[in-house]
Image 1 (tube, chains in turn cyan, purple):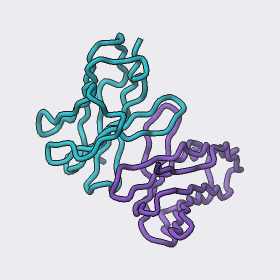
Image 2: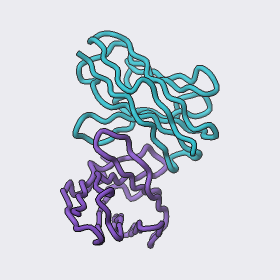
Image 3: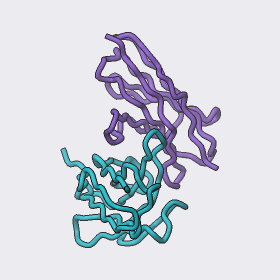
Image 4: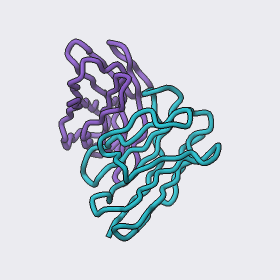
Length: 113
Length: 109
């Protein structure tokens, strides 16, 4: 069964450093998403991406964040200058229709020290 | 502010019983509703989607939607210890998914 994959599973970085989180969505999906979940809190929407551009973003997704689909399979989230409060699980998801069923990857645990 | 509310639990049920999980949402424009299961330290796993009023069954799971009451529920029949997890309700109205905090279910063998 096809699934969303994410790398790395755990990333530790120092405050102020740049990180890139990588995702490979399910191959026939057209809509891609990033979410985050701070420990013990809700899953929060960050950004949606369709047809090689951002379709919607939340207030969390400020200028420190960017997304890219550098080739036909990868989808990346870049955080330019990490802060302590960026420590969270970051989930990539993909789906066939806008705001339709979304399938989540296993997540990347980001720890900012 | 669009909100999805769930009782955080824990909800404890004996093995073989029916577990009933509930969710309310604030945005009347919500059209799509989803239940996800999340084991500790893992990612959300889609269990059910429901779009119209009434019941939708899939194996041991039944989702129920009542748009007039802005209420969604998930029934798990013949609960198993492996069903012990946090169940997340999510809603969308052609807008980003809004998740509830989740209800922690514990199935006691």
